[in-house]
Image 1 (cartoon, helix red, strand yellow):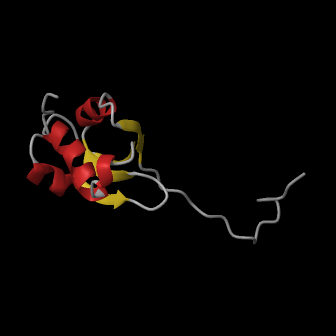
Image 2 (cartoon, helix red, strand yellow):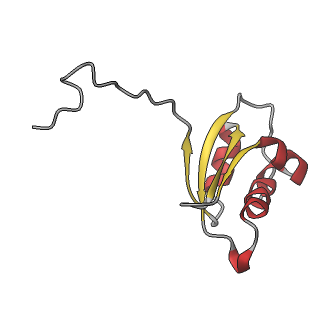
Length: 101
């Protein structure tokens, strides 16, 4: 894959779901390998990696530009790429919130 230009746009955290690592490969190493294919080096991949998910799903979160997201989305090992979103929890103080009808 071609290396994406890191300075072309601002970057933000994305969550990337991947296939399970093959042949008992260590998940974090697998995730870094996928990132390195887009970022151009293992060092750049390690710097961009925010977290490696290994328990209930295979994937990672990383700081990426829109161009890097587009390249990563084309990798056959990648199932889905989603932007990280901040969610707010609602308390039980407002009785209308959370009521089922």
